[in-house]
Amino acid sequence: MKTKKEYSERKLKKALEENKEKAKAFLNDDDKMETLFQEFEKKLKLIPKIGKRASDIAVLLSMLRAYIKKQYTDVAIGTILAAIAGLIYVVNPMDVVPEYIIGFGIVDDAAVIGIILQAMHMDLNKYKKWQKANGKR
Image 1 (spheres, rainbow, N blue to C red):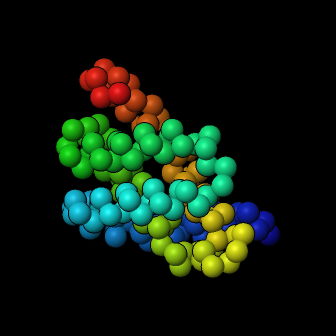
Image 2: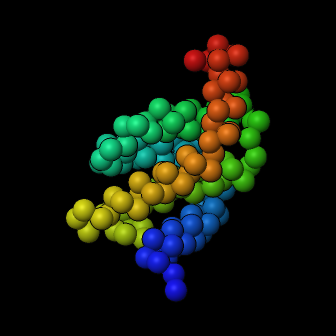
């Protein structure tokens, strides 16, 4: 029997997978991506205790922007699409746990951010090294 945590995580991962097609469309539209970044940054302000991961989130957004501008492309397209799918999920007010459910609506968003950052840990570190080597930081 699956625990509630395993069930929730499975639902989140399924939702992220479903957003990958949307992510492809966003990736090909600079205006949509910039709007997505802005909406994501607004949403972050609503998520409590995000502070310890804030620097990783900033690096993630920087890497995505650099990828879109074709300044940094040393990351798999699947990884980029997964990250964008996560951003789409977070900004969507009607995700697995809708925001209007007080106290719980932000929990799944924080979980998605955690999943993205954990999955991209090596890519983010590699990007930080690239930034430093190229005077981008």
